[in-house]
Length: 229
Image (tube, rainbow, N blue to C red):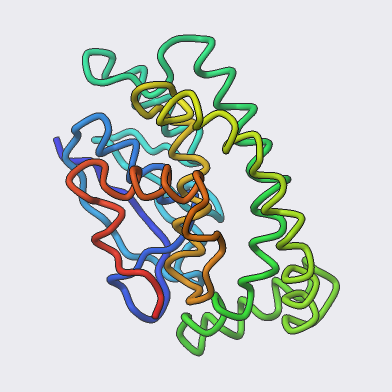
């Protein structure tokens, strides 16, 4: 049975950009599962399958699951015969740390630095919603939030140093092969790659080498959505 994934898009429905939806897309591909995408704008999210106010959401037969981490756990539990996303309780615990680190140390900055790029890729109706909700969240105009985020980008690049050190010993966060922890960080960099034309990392950065490896995974799933021009 084909799984349905509801994922976030802007005015161009061929360019899904949510970091959390990308985690799930990569997890589905990792498991080798058949899935179809329902392209969903910000203003279309509320009430999807009765699951709440955020994406991603999947429907698998009669089962509805929301939240990217919960979806990954569900896929691991229901398809134990397919490639592992966590590799056991230790891998699940590691992934929970990586998710918390990514949300607080990366996404908090990236969401501000790219806020105008995200706004500009949306339809007019979604732009109105996005501006109101993000200005309330940041307590600032979008332009002010962007300025704050851009100022913190050098600090953010420094926060990636543990990954650089790790990639001197192994090609993926998961070791010799990727795990869900890889897809968590990948989702954030893919988010920025799709919405912003400004390069985040230097060409010789080992993190960028890892990101390129992830873009090539699963028949180049990540590359099928072109980078922002």
